[in-house]
Image (cartoon, rainbow, N blue to C red; front, side, top):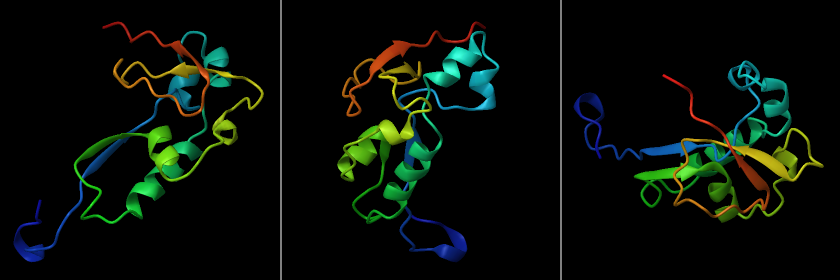
Length: 120
């Protein structure tokens, strides 16, 4: 992919990043059962660390990917994901319902509770 116009010829890497689990945010807290949901969520730090890993990767080699936060960090060498849990002693996390079923690797090893998609 190339930027057109003034930046003509400059290579541009494009990637997407999504969390495997719910993150402790106001949106999660406002869900029915939000207090429980926040306790079995991860902190936004996991997304920050995964974004950093992506942004510091060679852009010519790392582009065109839809990344899951913990898989990016696993590939960057992270082996302990407890630091990202809101409740470090809990081994259960609330799975994000947008992560496809075929993404079944879970490098953190936590039990994942399925989140119900919002009603329309």
